[in-house]
Amino acid sequence: MMIRNEILTRELIKYCNNINVDLVGFANPKFFNKYRPDNRPQAFLENPKSVIIIGLHLYDLLLDAWSKDEKKNMNYHFADSILVNQCYKIKNFLAKKGFKSKIIPYKPGLYLKDAAAIAGMGPIGKNNLLITEEYGSQVRLRALVTDALLFTGKPIHDNKYCKECEICIKTCPANAFSEGKYNKDVCLEYCQSNLDKLSDRTVLWCNICIECCPISKKVK
Ligand code: SF4
Ligand code: SF4
Image (cartoon, rainbow, N blue to C red):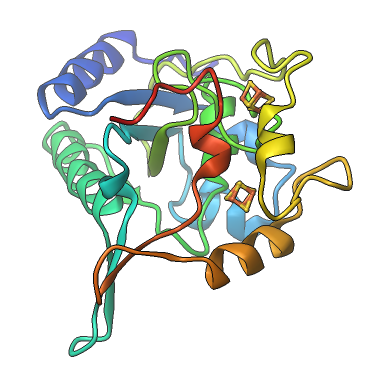
């Protein structure tokens, strides 16, 4: 039986705190078998032992803005840039201890909120997003896969937050939950035709299902 390294896990959590990671969780790759092969940890690293999920609190909606540099034809997402930078630091931290890790690209990648629920960071709410104890759904996520045998969390299946609440379902301007579950196409179509223009180059996508949730912290 493989023994998971509690001391290394504690050291990594401490390191994550030092580099201002708001949330960190560890998922066991064996729980990803229900996903397509290209959405499993094995698609990114041979013989993966742990998936590290980090979260950034969207304390200001500006962090969730997309900016386009027309000349370079590049898109920047502020929260994601911070998360990727933190991922590189974690990768280096593990490399110095002799472990391989790979930062998982955004697309195709893992289903990040599912990975976070598998890591025990919180359940998936009726808004189809991760709900965390600390920040509700006001988080953006990124992940790395590693051959370090970290102490992994217990998957969360039960949603203790939503109960009878239906605020996000009723508030969604696109009616994306009208069929009893989240409809990605309806949501995307609404978002793309209702971008909130912050400047000529920078836009915000609809965030209403996050902002209206009473569990989520208010964005100031
Ligand atoms: S608004 Fe209510 S139903 Fe929607 S995710 Fe938040 S708690 Fe759950
Ligand atoms: S992002 Fe906006 S359109 Fe999409 S589900 Fe949330 S509230 Fe509805």
